[in-house]
Length: 425
View 1 (tube, rainbow, N blue to C red):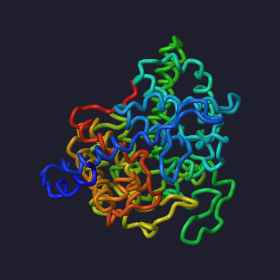
View 2 (view 1 turned 60 degrees about the vertical axis):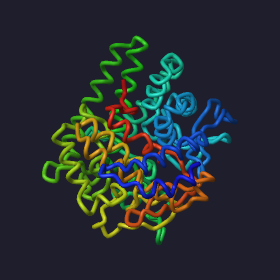
View 3 (view 1 turned 180 degrees about the vertical axis):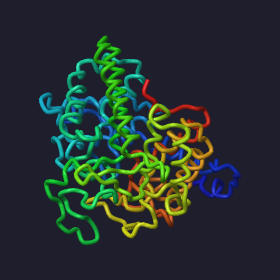
């Protein structure tokens, strides 16, 4: 039994970056609890879908893509496919608009537009199921999504894509923005700060990575369905985005990726986990030299804690591990498992295996700590939280959260075996 095993595992000592006791404990918890994120069709959601669990019972864009990918070995592929189909079904073919949070009762307005993860999520599901044709009826919706980002969010002078607001990115109140969204500044004062001109000005590395992967995924679908010219054009568009990323966001002086304000035409120097995020896209986007340099940049004491990469530098005056979930989740200091895991996968793909396993070990440590510190919650499936205090490892917000935390369970074995479930083929 999970709880009965805690004492035995707690005394295991390992010289590896990954403690096998932590790894075994986390895997057991995921195997026991993971299918709590699976949902059958309901109301406006006509296909099976995934939820984060606990506090969150809605279908969210990048949550479902990452959870579905994390649990492929546990049979999540139909739920990942269904989640993407639910989003694709909701796409307005004229504008490419679709909200980032869907419920059986309809779309939630919280996330202005779904993050550009839907097409790549569909491709991962198609490959896992050996069934591309299930997505052929949605090809027009995929192209409409690409059109939305091209026509609405792309900065003409740089070729960079932008977020409508920081909240839309999923890194709700990250310090790359002065004002996260129309909900205000957030804790502690939650002052009114949003003005219309703030929209579509933040060009951070994450949106470039997601769009690069969306274009690669769309090219794969187009080629599979026989549209070879369109596939070549999409691959060329991805290559152009790579050039823009390298031109405007790579800092040779600092050895990491910055962000950019397209209105002020100014680099955003705030140090966050995004300085390393482009490695997630793999060697086609980030060179081996760049990968080594961003690991050096993100493994400094202000960024790397005992429990993983901080969402924001400890040296920034806005750094905080405050525990809150409204109007934003806290991305100003805590450890977020998903972004750490994606960076680890990227480092592994750049032959930075030791660095990738180092991150994996830290993530397993904090998740195992959450289980050992709360044996009742471990038994009930409510032990984990959506993020973690980067100094103490204490869980923050959303009890019962599973979601992308489950990426950590199978991360070390994937790194050791050279497997990456997020690879787009």
